[in-house]
Image 1 (cartoon, one colour):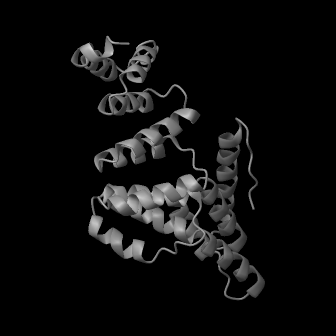
Image 2 (image 1 turned 30 degrees about the vertical axis):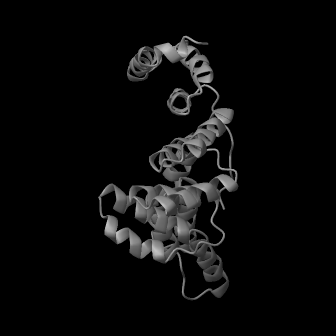
Length: 234
């Protein structure tokens, strides 16, 4: 099994492994150990479909101990393979085909990343309640991905659950303190909830950001003018 390396040389290390494996493969592409190592490598890179292909190629059908190890690896990435297949279908707008795979995903023992991606897929399918269910499950598992706060916050807003939406953006900002998208969406909700004092403070803060996106800056200036009377009270 390839070990985890938490340092700046990690990608260089993986590329070196690829080169070594490529040289070996030319000599013996049917070697079970070589194919298993390729599978491990692709798992590390989160290319689960490719990993699954190499794991299946590595099954010996003669060595029960080795095959049990390989089958365990295949089982461990089963959900992630299906999620990768789903993401490919979503990219190709084949939404109807997604339901067949979603129906066969085991919802037990999903990790925070699995739950996020399933939520993301349901969001793309406009299955709002399902999307929220899995996004929230991911958060319950301590997910801290920036996109989950943006997507779930916007989803609650779409469903007119303004207070919940605001709490999600605030939760995101507790981790990504200076993220302009989270703060901008928080301002929109504060204005809708007539929390003008807080909205004014956040507007002033956001306009101090260096390299602030022009569209966000223009929108803030527009909102300042639109809510001028309410904001000038504070």
